[in-house]
Image 1 (tube, rainbow, N blue to C red):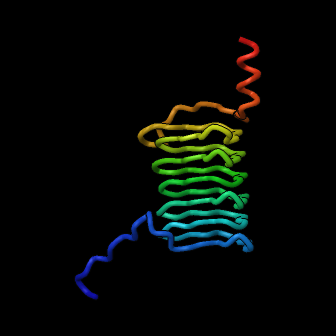
Image 2 (image 1 turned 90 degrees about the vertical axis):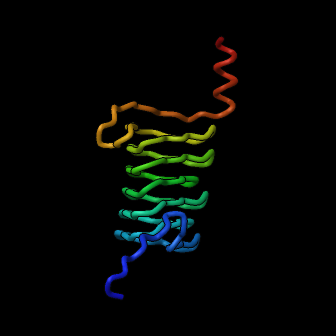
Length: 142
C-alpha cells in the first residue's frame, strides 16, 4: 500500500477487552482503545480511550486520550482530554487532564491538575468520599 496514508484508529472503537475473569500483569500499549472489566497490574498507555467497568481493578499508571472509570484505580491517570469518574468509581492517585468529571458517589483521593494543556495545569488537592449520608450531615450542621 505504497502512497496510501494509514488512517488513525477511531478512539471510540474498542480494540481490546480484558474480561471480568482475566488478570493482565505488565505494560499494555497500543493505538486503539481498551475496556477493562477484570484486573490490570502495571501500566496502560493507549492513544485511544480507557474504560474501566464497575468490576475492574487497576493497580496501574494510566495514560490515554480520555478515561471513563467505574471501577477501582490505584495509580495515576494522565489524559489529554477528559477523565470521568462515575458514581461507582474509586481512584487513589493523581489525575492530570483537560476536564475532570466526578459523579456523585465517586471516591477520589489524590490531587488533580486541569488546564487546556495538562502539563501547564495548576494543582487542586481533593479528597472526597461523597455520599447522600454526608450530605445529610452537612444539612444538619447548617
